[in-house]
Length: 112
Picture 1 (cartoon, one colour):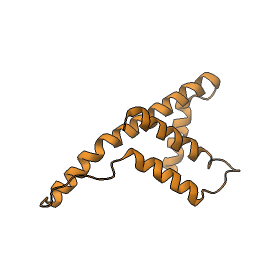
Picture 2 (tube, one colour):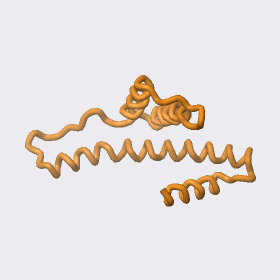
Picture 3 (tube, rainbow, N blue to C red):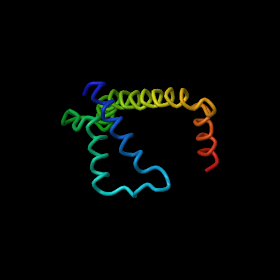
């Protein structure tokens, strides 16, 4: 999968999950769950080639090797999407910077 295809799926994931944020947000339904699962599964390999006589460590290594590239690509796409949103936010709302939003989020997370 190309970086552009991963980014398209990341944007779709963010867009779909955004619908479920806020006081008036609907509860996620099974159709949404299926869509989100498919978008996530598309990013990662569906199979890994493993020798029949592979040891458990070799199996783990093969899976880690197959998954590490797609995981880093997905993380990169989520980070790029965040930075684009943060730049837009900071342009439009200079009173509350995206850095301040992140600090507040970190404080809330650490107090829970």
